[in-house]
Image 1 (cartoon, rainbow, N blue to C red):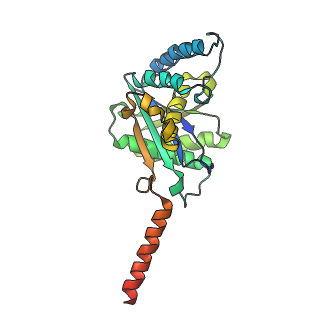
Image 2 (cartoon, rainbow, N blue to C red):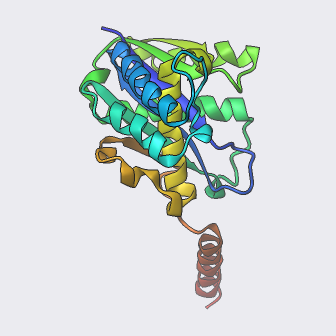
Length: 239
């Protein structure tokens, strides 16, 4: 049975004014449940925002308030058969990571999938994955790059991975992934705006952190410790 993995990103690798970059979304085998849930909440939010029900408009996380976003989030978190997922990248501890944004994105998606497989999640007991991602920042070349990259990575697992790039304004599942990615981004970059506190089942989110050993540590303190250790080594050698 096919497993769908729907992802969106929040933040950007090149921005200096934010520490964490996030790729997040959910896994499911019942995509119709997610799209139906989005449609139900969209109607409620449209009424609150005085938008005609039949007017086609994308309610991006940046265009709705926290209360409205929490409605979408609690709806998807309450669905059985849906597993929220994320990878959070600590950019302050990537001093030697010089890859382009597209290459970095592919690398982080691969790391997220490897982490999820290690978690032994039943929904990943499959040999057929369809990865559905927002196409907003994707070059034509990288469309095939990610799929090829993942197929090589998981070839020994007898796993077929197909990647679909979708326009979020026409795909409710990608819009749901946007809400999850934005919530996780706020939790790490803007603790005072932590939206996860409004989501009762946020604890269900599988979160990978990169780089794992240095995640969240102060790079300056780490550098001082390294220098101190070097000085200690010199003293031992010279004594």
